[in-house]
Image (cartoon, rainbow, N blue to C red; front, side, top):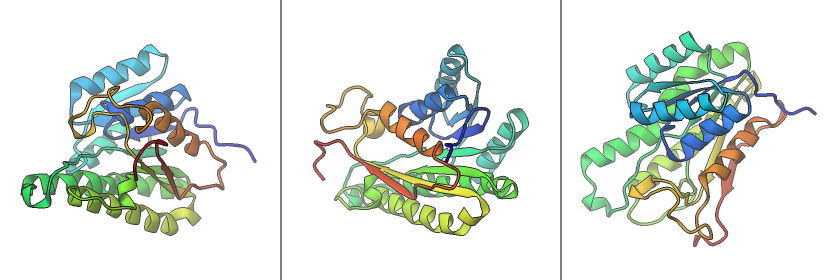
Length: 241
């Protein structure tokens, strides 16, 4: 059974200005995908799109706030106008704070749920109808191992990631017979900027390199047409969990 050829397909990657999203966009472009990179920071997005272009790929940068339906709707329409209908959506945008729940502000609580959960749902809502009309499409949701286990001092984040896992699993069973795959990645600690860190500062024994997580995500997209990875979990061997 042949694997899927991604060349010429169109992907939308959220949270693509840095970290895992940037690496996913670069990896997709290496495999011949035309990539729309999105986030709220235009300058960083333009740098990522430039990296892809310098390497011979095709990319567009689009400023998009996944927590706002009007922004998502306009963003997906812009991708459609310039590149075409989205074949692959990678819901990677995410935020979170490590602090006791009683010290979490309402603004932080709203932002966590709006970006991590509602943002995933909004982007999916925007791209899914055309995928169903073509009986083809792939959606990857970057959740977290905290979508399957709990720790203290991250209650809103954990709730949002549990929600992503539940949403994706339910939707997969709704649309898979119409040719659309909905897949979820639940990684452990990744060596990125999340939580105020800097990429390249975490010890590899207990954290994942984002470029290898990106490679695993894109490998899933190339699996044979009639295969689907419902959910994949990956951790560094030294992570204490």
